[in-house]
Image (cartoon, rainbow, N blue to C red; front, top):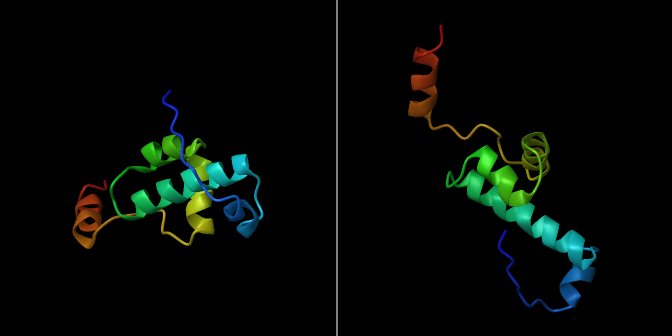
Length: 84
């Protein structure tokens, strides 16, 4: 596991009403949700980045109002063609 250190103003914690550990966890989830929304990573990878289960990640997508299915119309049509 790699550890990354960042410096943040102390005021950011009070802005979100979170202690530093909660803030860092929320940053991980937020980043993972955005990268998933942009199609850069899978749900499994996003959950790993966020440090939560895939089911918890799907709940986070709901909380952030991001669709859990990130298919283009063409990808969805292809999936439907392959359904038995």
